[in-house]
Amino acid sequence: MTQLSVDITGHGPPLILLHGWAMHGGIFAPLVQALREHHTLHVVDLPGHGHSRDCGVPLQLNACVQAVLDVVPAAPWCGWSLGGLLALHAAATQPARVPALAMLCATPKFVVSDTWPHGMARDVFTGFEAGLRSDWRATIDRFIALEAFGSDHMREELKLLRDAVLMRGEPSPRVLAEGLQLLEQSDLRDALPALAVPSVWIGGRRDRLVNPAAMQASAAQSALAHFVQIEHAGHAPFLTHANAVAEALLGFLDTSDRHAHEGGQKQ
Image 1 (cartoon, helix red, strand yellow):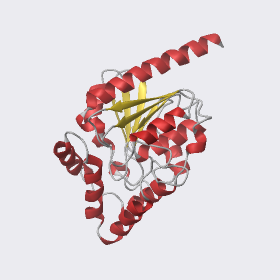
Image 2: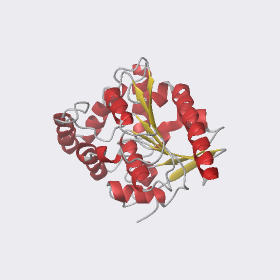
Image 3: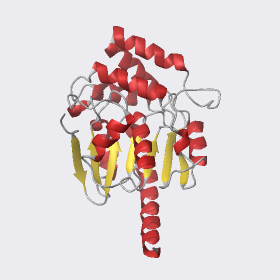
Image 4: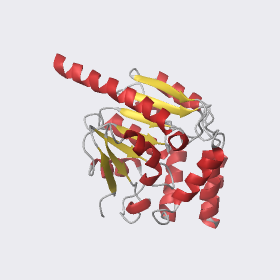
């Protein structure tokens, strides 16, 4: 197995960025531009995606988190969508390495259930899984359309996502299927009440993949969490509302840094 690909840019304290399903770290370009004067950004390509396409790491929670930990310093993690699941798992299991958590259009459970009314219908995922087997390109395009839907800059966002998806080569079809299974099967809600690190949950009010109510409900279950809503954004607010996302992140990171510093002085 080879190590994950990481782009490192910017100045200041480190911050880890994890992308979503079928994408790669390059999708964060507008957010990187907004943050690079404040933080050293470690932008990871997840297993099977982008420049990490052939790394050999399975797209599973424990394996992915360990692979990321192997290539980044101790620092806050910001995870978008699928990347948020990984970031939450890392913060819950490795708080010394992940001292703060930013969830960007992500929840601990993506699929609806009797005790979780905020998720997506399971048949949406089974439809995507069936589509992957017959035409993975068309399936990714359908997923991208859902990501852009609802944003007040929908056409611009759709173009940015479509242009970006194959910019670093084709994703691995095997890993695409693993990623959908991870989104469909994961349930990390039990981690929330015991989450020992501060967290911010940033949602787009018009997101059609991750209901912002799910993010608000998740934040309410963790003592050191708060929820921020980007009013006119869909599932990828960092593309068309990068400054608003950066403002929410910078405010949170500044507060969590002070909290950690004061806690360290008291010990």
